[in-house]
Image (cartoon, rainbow, N blue to C red; front, side):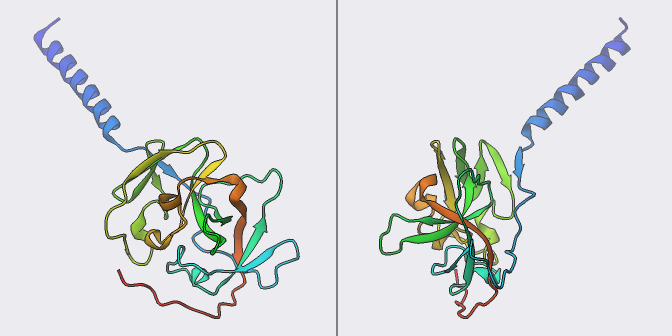
Length: 203
């Protein structure tokens, strides 16, 4: 083999190796094409649905339906109901004085949830969704310190997190994984009759 052919072959192998290394460096992502940013309005929910007032600020952001005082429409849990990432659920809390709250499903049973510098990773993949990192809520409001943690979810347990992390006192960051038995239903809409508004917290 001539010296010229050897040089071309070596250059080709080098470029192939470089391409492979670059591909490994690229971060794998996990997307969510299903979850809407805002809830629809149901003015007159039917009898199969529950209407509950929102009492906490854990989901507070620029979407009006999550202001305190909003009336949320809940589809009660039924046999065979499956939840997916991005769903906002209504669940029982460990605090008996504040018996129920709402939060978003971030991690599903059996998954490894890692939060690094307030960015969520699922099984090593960066969660590429509008709720995948803390800074999306309230024009970039963040906790005083970056959130860093990792845990593996047991079977029939979920990782729940409010959209405003530092006000989500019943989230899995604070309380740990939430058992499926604690979930009472899914938030599917709001009534659009918001009587009380809270002032956006300054951070």
